[in-house]
Length: 119
Length: 397
Figure 1 (spheres, each protein chain N blue to C red):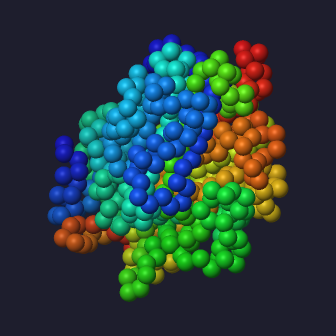
Figure 2 (figure 1 turned 90 degrees about the horizontal axis):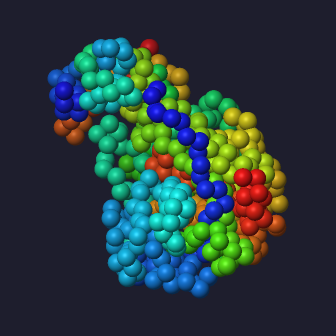
Figure 3 (figure 1 turned 135 degrees about the vertical axis):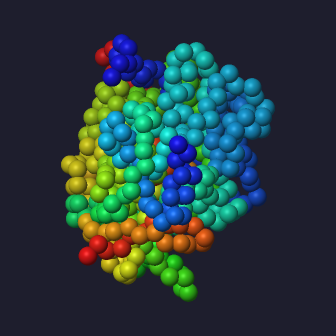
């Protein structure tokens, strides 16, 4: 398994995949060649539910004409936490505890997982 | 877990000491490169106890832009050290160097250890310099590293515990009050709560005054074994405890943004030094951002978890308060040349040595120097004590 390469290949095909360790059942993100701590290498790719909760959030302020944007840490329903941003509302309206859903967008010619409010 | 026979932490408490501690080029120092600055601080620290570079046989140096910096610096000083340490954990590197130097001195692998740092980042770049590769898991979201990571820790602490922006402001104001007593500090104008609240926002909840300065500066300390220290400097700062904890690298991998590795590092360092938090006379924390002071005070047990915001209120950590914290003005108001860890060590040692002038904490005998590297990734705690505390420690052995 080539973790980083395969992850981004899946994303380019529109699939947000997480690794799961067959022996422990635990999900892993970011992708790597072995489960943290155990070193187990029986990893498989599983489609992410895309559901998550905002663990923390900030608004990165910029001098005009550049615009402020959101940065957030998302606790995925499967367990791992990832950095991303929440779109579809003003950056300062993103709140800790908010339920969010992933979608894949294309930005600067690369696929990127972002989130939007789940409701 | 199978780890063989478990051995007790046998850190050689009180067996080595900082005998010289100096800074150079605080604020702006145009025309010098990183090694020029580190050399100035080193020669100054060595001269305090009548030594020169040729006496140094243990050397630890990191700089922002050269991964093999200890080799460059040994060459620059014209020495061939027996013991070197080039460990790079960001701002905590220097506390890790001191911990290793204490072991190397105890084992006879060197006799005079020099730990040095220098940075021209303000004059050369004018902004924080990164020495890490961009992360594929973070870069697409354009984090403002490291500020946005610490901002999210602050947001989380506010969410969980009701910590307020004004409480963050109390940290910045206390640091500024100390800086006003330090002629070497970069920012010495008065800072009011109104000034603080009106500062330009950078990454919520942080404004400019929540963030460390971008300056030039250099620092150095000289460490020797206790027997030699007694000859060189009657007011040496003995290393009573030194411990560090590594928890993650990137902020998304930090288990809990309100609890740092400082908790575990402090627990071990206090145990080695046989002291408790409340016995400390002065505490020098890596306050790169206002929330840090609050988190680290909680981690070290100065107040209950979640109470840090209330603890720093009413000037408790400012001059005249109940706990002297960041007496040089910290990285918020004194100096922050890329990595700040060695400056907490110099200030802690100088407080023990009693050479801090207007900001001197009267009778300071026990001081803590803290280092923070990455984004709460590497946390380190050093406990320094005056000769009397080291002697008490030896008698307890």
